[in-house]
Amino acid sequence: MLSLPQNSIIDLADPVLITGARGFIGARLVNALQAVGFKDIRCLVRDSTITKAEENRPAVNWICGNLLNQDDCNRITRGVKLIYHLAAGTSSKSHADAFLNSVVTTRNLLSAAASNETIRRFVNVSSFSVYSNRGSPRRGLLDESCPIEKSPELREDAYCFAKVKQDELVERYGKEHGIPYVHVRPGVVYGPGKSSIHGRIGLGTFGIFLHLGGFNRIPFTFVENCAEAILLAGIIEGIDGHVFNVVDDDLPTSRRFLRLYKAQVRRFPSIFVPGIASYMLCWFWELFSGWSQGELPPVHNRREWSVYWKKTRYSNQKAKSMLHWSPRVPMSIGLSRYFEFCRDAQRNA
Image 1: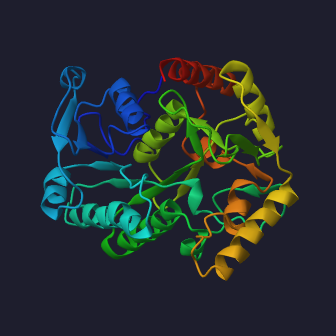
Image 2: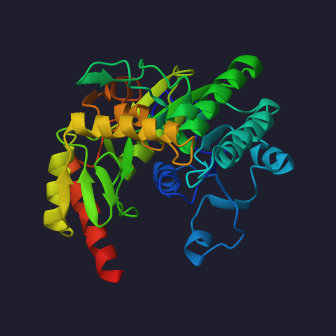
C-alpha cells in the first residue's frame, strides 16, 4: 500500500484538485489519494448529480464545473496546492472538437493556476500517442527521450493531435509563468471498466478480426498501477519538468494476448496480417486517399503503423528510479481481472 513519502512536496491536509475524476483512470486516482490519507481531495465533475457512494466518501469533495468556463477554473483552483489534470476529449472525432476539449480546457486551467500563488505542481496526464516512431529501428526502445510527433495532424488521429498540442501548452506555461509541471504518459491502460480490444492488437472489420500486432509487445499498464504512478508524479520532490512513461513489467506480445483473450473470454475468427503486409496496406490507403482527394480519409497510414504495429521495446526504468514506483498488480493478475470483467460484459450484453 502506498504511503506519503518523506520527500513529498505537499502535506496530507493540503488541497488537491483532480479533473476527470470520474474517468477510467481518474476514479482510481481518487481511490489511491484517499488510501494514502489525503484529507482534501477536490474532484471536478460536469454533472452535479452526486451518488450516495460518492457522497459518503470522507475527504472527497465533488465540485461541479466546466473547464471551458474560465470563471469555473478560477474558482476550483483557488487555494489548491496540486493539480492532477486527467480530463481530455477522448471521444472527440474531429481535430477541432479534440482541440476544444483538451487544449482550450487545459489553457483555461493553466491560466487559473498561473494566478494561484499556492500551486506546487501541475501533473499533465498525457499519452504514448504523442510519440513518433517513424525514425526508430525495428525493435528499438521507446522511452522518454524519443521524439514527439512533429506534424500530429498528419496522423489523422484527433486524440494524438490534441495531446501533442496540450503538452506543448503545458511546457510553454511552465516556462512563461513559472508553473512547476510534470508529464505522465501512460501506455495502453487496461483493467475492469474497459472491455474493448485495443487497436495495437488489431482491427475488427466485416466480422473478421485482423490481427496486426503479431509478436509486438503491447505497452500495457493496469489501471491501478497507472493511477499510483500518477499520484507519485504529483508529490515527489525534484522532478519538475520531467516526463514519465508508465508501462508495467512482463509485457505480453500481441499474439499471446489475443490467444489468452480467446481462451478466457470468447472465441472469434481472426486473420494474422504480417508486418510488411500491414505496412503496405497503410501505404496503399494513403495513396488511395490522395487519389480520391480526401473522400476516403487517410485514417490508416504509415505514421499510425509505426506507432501501433512496428516492433518496439518499452521501458519503465525512469518511473522506477525517480518516482520509486513499481507495478503493484502483476501482469498475470491484471490480465486475469481484466478477462473476468470482459466475460461478465459478454454475458450481460
